[in-house]
Image 1 (cartoon, rainbow, N blue to C red):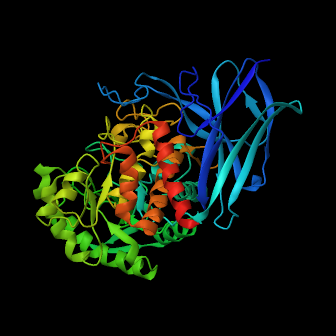
Image 2 (image 1 turned 135 degrees about the vertical axis):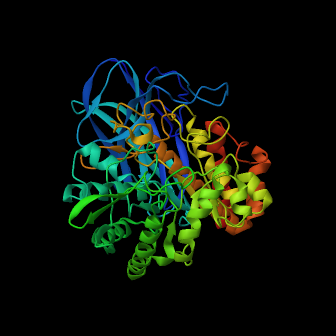
Length: 542
């Protein structure tokens, strides 16, 4: 039997055909409190069932997962850019499956195991060997040892506010459970915990069904946390499910809340779907047929928002709660956005209103105080004046920009960490944590077979976790993005030690000026960048 194993970086996609950089690595370094990952790539000419043994003084902190392959019909948009790793349709290594007991070693192709050391803050600094043995019939088929150096410095806490939009209908549809049933709540808890584990600390909270990526005139599955009653023209509200959501999210580790959009996407022209018990009949009372500036919807918001704010204050989250008006309005939609804001601004004077938009006129004119421009446009905002910068990316940020598409090198995904640090970004938004729908939510999809929303968005844009047996499992991309967040935090520590300007200069001396379109893109460059930061921290820690 031929069984080949190699230790490779976490920034290398191990493709089935083996046509990838399988440069072997045997060592690395990390801070205390950091999560460090690498892979063991393998190829076998026979299938067999194996036991995996972790031999290490830090074995209790180590997990081993299997990297699974999923299909992509559209890894990236059609492009002449040479920045992509692969542009052809095919199978891509992405989902991280837990290994419960024995592990099936597959034959003929290249596969990999994902090795993660989750280091506690109080671990003793020093050098630790991690030996991973693969046993066949209790006989050693392979043994690989990685040397991990733990530095005498603690990774700082994440200060960046990071949201990936949480889609409740994706959970209910995939698992075929009623919304807000006990099974739904149990699954939601798993998806929340997994989000926090990937660095997400703000959660989209659907007081009403979020009016996001929904066909005009269409509807998404109702996932409304607030009960609405309309009796003889008078509104009343039930917040039991909202309170349960908030308390569950806090227990899972969320620190910030964003209330779902109060008006439709792309210009705030209409009301979101709102379902109510209207004089004893459960029905939709607002939606695409309700103009945003109508008296009916305006009166509703004037009744609803003060009651919601009372509950927000009673749950003591008022300092960490944000509101949305409409997602991605453009320059031609300022009038409708302004009308919508006129309705809600007096009711939300104590809360920040944040929206993803990239037209500077909204900010310059005072229409919004907390815009979230895309990474394509963020530098223009910073140059013109942007004291509390947030940014986002979605399907439109490809080519030379960092993103998490299947077709992009993972080093490009991770590179955003140094960009977030240099530009002092305070918040980051990405729209697809678990969007398991086709474009415009025409149908629900199986994310293990459709990864591009029916060739609407490049694979990797719509979700970063997968639904597994009893809840969410992570992906290679979610782990690599978390590495970017850790890079940012390590650079912050170096900045505290030496001054931020000196920390940036230390990096740019090696790699040149860092911008959102100009940065190190190669695996070896990103790994070297982090080692430079670690060595500088180590020198200051001695």
